[in-house]
Amino acid sequence: MSLQSIRLEIDALDARIIALLAQRWRLVREAAKYKSTAREVEAKERQEQVVAGVRRMAEQQGLSPRVAELVYRILMSEFTALERREAGL
Image: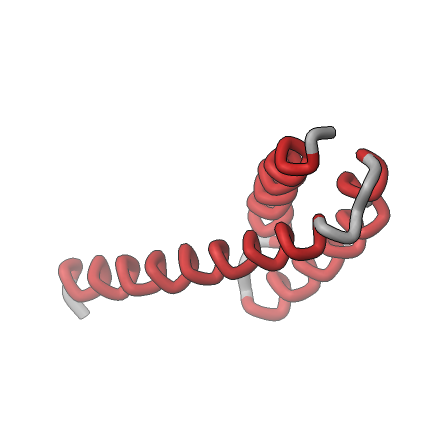
C-alpha cells in the first residue's frame, strides 16, 4: 500500500465520518424538540451512558478508549451548546 492510497482511504473515511456526524446532529436537533429545560438538554446521565458505550466500542475495535472518550466529550459539548442556543436556553 502506498502513502497516496492510504491518504485516499483516509479522505474517504473522513467523508463518511462527516456524513455520520451530520446525521447525528440532525437527530440531536430532532430530540431537542422534546426538551424544555437546560437540564433536559444537558442530560448528564445520558452523556455518561454514551461515553461508557463509546469506550466499550472503542476497545472492541482496537481504538484507545481515551481517544474515543475525548472525541465524544467534545462532540457532545458542542452539540449541547448548539442545542441550548437553538432552544433559547
